[in-house]
Amino acid sequence: MTATPLPAATILMLRDGPGGLETLMVVRHHQIDFASGALVFPGGKIDEADTQVRDYCHYDGEIQDEDLSLMVGAIREAFEECGILLAYPRGESALISGKRLARLDRFREPLNKGRLRLKDFLEQEQLLLACDRLQHFAHWVTPAMMPKRFDTHFYLAAPPTDHLATHDGYESVDSVWISPQQALSGAKDGTYTLIFPTRLNIEMLGTSQSVAEALAMAARRHITRVLPWTEERQDGIYLCIPPEAGYGINEERVGDNQSELVRSIMRPRADANR
Image (cartoon, rainbow, N blue to C red; front, side):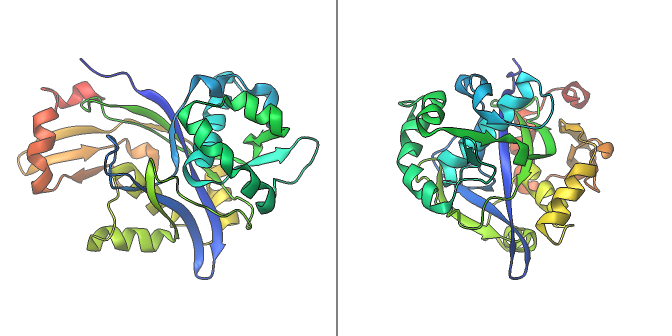
């Protein structure tokens, strides 16, 4: 049976580094059952609590409940996983300071473990989640052949410069501010592991030289839902995505060392995955 994709969201945190644009990435714990050991963006699946805090969100214009919950989940997951919280003190127009963030760090584990409700945390600390600071960037769905699937929305955001990122030690075991070029180079030489969607989004991010340029690029993008599928051909297995997604490629041959694994979980007909 095909698994139902779980709603999920992730944030590409951005900053202007000495050598140009950088993004925050974390290394997934090796015991995590999805993308273990991989270099990824902070994020995760949407919780029921993410649907219950509309009154604790700051956003522009009208927004559907489903879209708002994705933004809320992205912000919450980033706080739990890497310690950055995109939020306003209620009644203020500037994001919380690094000093205030340090005092809030003690709430990360209780939120992550379900011992503290998100709504109660925001009420107690008089915070509004800064959903208006998120720029939609991409939308990917795990292929139908996979046993565990996610329907993931990617956002861009620029946190305050005094927000210190610290990995949680549970889902992620390391964190790093890295340029797209460094991440891609590290993937080639074996320093890092990048799964297919992460790599393509890093490549797209790398077409921008600054935070402002990346946010403007994302605002111009037509977001296409990307559901990859596999095709077995005479020269091997290919992973395919819709060309209208705008990534510059629409297919890639799976390496020989991965072909048997992919073949073992492929559906009988490749077009059944579309």
